[in-house]
Image (tube, rainbow, N blue to C red; front, side):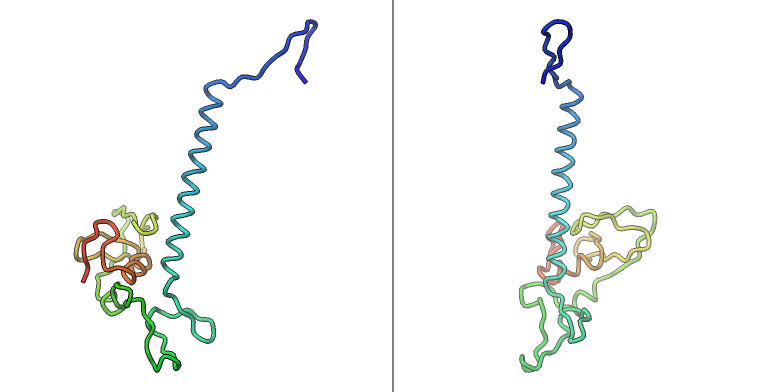
Length: 150
C-alpha cells in the first residue's frame, strides 16, 4: 500500500545507480562461483575416472588391480591414448617453494608452498601431481600448450 501524507501523495521506490551496480556485482559473483564449481566437478570426474578399489574398499592406483575374470589382465586408462603409469612416474617432480607462485591449469588452484608439483619436460609447465597425472592418463599432452609428452 502506498505511503500517504496529509495529501494524496504516492511515493515510489526507484533504483539508484548503486543498487543496480550491487545487483549486477552479485549476479557476476554468482556466475563466477557457478563456473568454478563446474570446473571443480569436472576435475573431480577426471581424477576419479580411472580410480579403482580393492575388495576392502581401499583406493588403488590405476593399473594395479589384477582381476581373475580378465585372465590376470591389468586395468589401465592408457588404452584410451594417455600415458601409462611407468611413463608418468618418470616425469620430474619438485616441492613448491614459497617464492614460486604457480597455478595449476587443471584444477585452477594455486600450488601452495610445500606441495608436490610435477613439471612436464616437453614444455616446463608445472601442475599439482594428482591433477596432471589424471590428465596424462587420458591424453599425453600438456594441459596448457598441448605439447606432446612421450
